[in-house]
Length: 392
Ligand SMILES: *Cc1c(COP(=O)(O)O)cnc(C)c1O
Image (cartoon, rainbow, N blue to C red):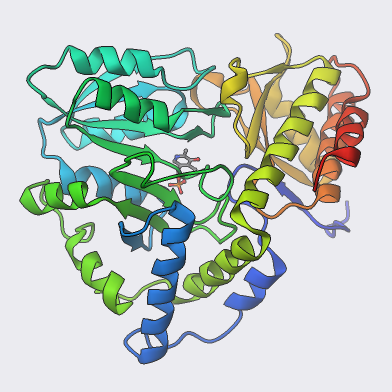
C-alpha cells in the first residue's frame, strides 16, 4: 500500500470546512505583540467586521479562544443562575448537547420534543411561554441550523412567538453552522445572544468562538448570572473599544478571520447565501434522483450549508463514509446521536467552487455504488443540469 494519496483531500464535513488559500496565507506569518498598537487595530477591525456578519449595529461582540461549545457556556453562565429555567426544543444532537450542558450547570430545562426531522415549532414555543405567566422561564434557546439533521429553525418566528406571549425571556441562538451560510439577523430578529464558531461558514480553522450580545443580555449579565471568571462578558465591553483582550488572544486565527471576512465582503453576503442555497438545492436534486431520503422532512426548513441523507434500512451510513474516504479521499459528516449510522451528511458550506461541489457529489455517487447501497443513477447529472443554468 502506498502512503501518498495524489490529489486534494475533499473535506466535505459540515465543519471544519475547507480553508481558502488567502486565509491560509494570511495566517502564515509571525505572531505580534498582543498589547501593541498593530494588534489593537486588528482587534477593532475584527469586531467591526463581525458586527456586519451578525447583521448588528451595536451588539457587544465576544471572542473567546474556544470552540463553539465555549460560547454556549459563556451565554448560560453570564445570564443565568443554577435553578433558573430555560426552554429548549430538542431538534437534534446539538440542541441535545446544549441542553446537557445546561443541566450540568444546574439549570432547570423545559424541553420540547421533535422527531429530529424539522426545526423547532414556534407554536409549541408560544404555548409553553403562555403557560408561564410568572415568567419563570429566563431564556429560550434555539439552534438556527441543526447541523446533525440539516433542518433550520425560523428564528424570526420564534421571536414573534415570544412577543405574542409578551414573554420577557432572553432569546439565545446557536448560529454556529449558519453564520456565513444563511441570512442571519441578530438585530432585526431581536436575538439577545447569538453564538458562533470559526470553523464552519466562516472558513477559519477551529479554535475561535463568537458571541453577539444585546443590551438586554448585557444588563442581565451585569445584574446577575452565575459565578464565572474566564467566560465573563464584562471585559469584552472594553475589548470592543480597544481591540485588546485580558489574556493572549489567538493572534494567528485573528489574521485568518480578518481575511475570511474580507472574502465574505468581496463576494457580498447575499451572494454567499445564494451560493449556499444553490449547492443545497443541487444536493437535494441529486438525492431525489438517487431515490434516497432526506433527513429533513420540512421543505421550508432545508439548511443551506449541510444536507443529511438517510441510507436505506439495513444499510450502514458509516460503512459508506469509510468506503468514500478510502477509495475517493473524501471526508463526509457522520450521523450523530440517535441517527448514528443511519445518515451521512454532505457539508457544502464555506469555501466551495462549483466544480469542487460537483466533484463532491461524484464521490458520493461512486461511493453509493462501491458500498452496495441501493440507489438510482443520475444524481450528479441532475445536479449538473441545474447548476449549468442556475444564476451565478
Ligand atoms: C459544530 C456545532 C456545534 C459545536 O461546536 P464546536 O465548535 O465543535 O464546539 C454546536 N452547534 C452547532 C449547530 C454546530 O454545528
